[in-house]
Length: 442
Image (cartoon, rainbow, N blue to C red; front, side, top):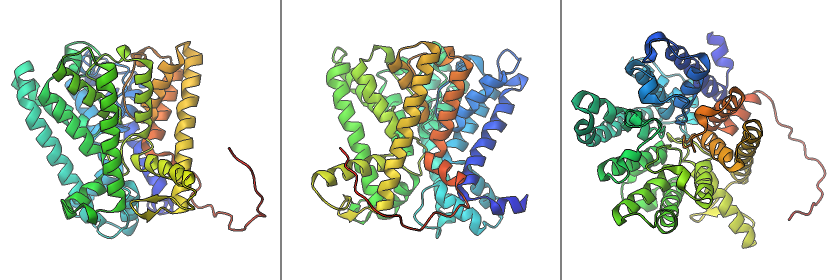
């Protein structure tokens, strides 16, 4: 076993770690006491739910509040915590707390898992990630607890506060509001300022990435000292929140009262970035609004965060590359720093992979289920972006379509390039150069 670990690359360890967590979660959810009827879930439902939880997606085929028992809900939130912080991060944290020594191989794997720039200081960073994550989740639960306790009683209210705080921070989108109305998400709290502000804050903080936290902690308000990546993440995140919120405010919720209009516009601009909660009926949003949400779902959060998607940095690099072509510049620049050609190629590859998976999945599901293409594309964007938003078709899909969503959720969480690097691990690239010839594009 030890020899096998040594032969596995960091990418392979990450992929296998997520797969192992999904299989363990599926087994636990199949136990009789995991469901309220005492029968246990079937393998298909258990696998879909476990995948959605570990991949912090939020798509469900059974209502979380009414189908799963408290034990089943506890398994789901535990899987969400593992998936949000990262399987490798949790494993290394256990090693740290048990006093065991962290090997160089484990440090290297941890570096790749959280997108750290170097191996040095990775153990300290892991401790910081774990402590900060738990503190923020606890703070979120404390803020929401009075609201939920007032609605559901003390015991149930505290559990609901903890569950939704972890789910929001990990960008998972699982909720327990089915006790009001099945699959209703947070529509009951559409304009509630405390719930809206708490969930929005947790989603954004969880989605900007662990390395950005470290930058903020180290340099505080001295933004000029931040890493270029942190600057890109913060600026891109802000733009992807403000601009869609302005669109939703003026074009989608114009008929709502002002306070409700502000909260719903802001919430719907934040939640597609891989969180998966919703406070309005998504079927009432126009096709233009749905397309905008699809774009936001595909972009997702930031590297080394609890969020999925192709990442804000990928989006920024692609846009900057386009701008450099328009300006006839040889290199891509961000914040007066030149971006490596390899990074540009990786960004283009990631964009192509996500678009291919999103479109292919949507086409196949639309054909099999005989459903509108936009509805199916919304579903596949939600899956590959690990978002969890749905137009209400998830629970009605057949086994093949569910299998496609499971695959998209898994690939979306581990990352397309991680999968490629894992498959090609040990293969040496061809370093020879072939003759060059021009080809016209565009």
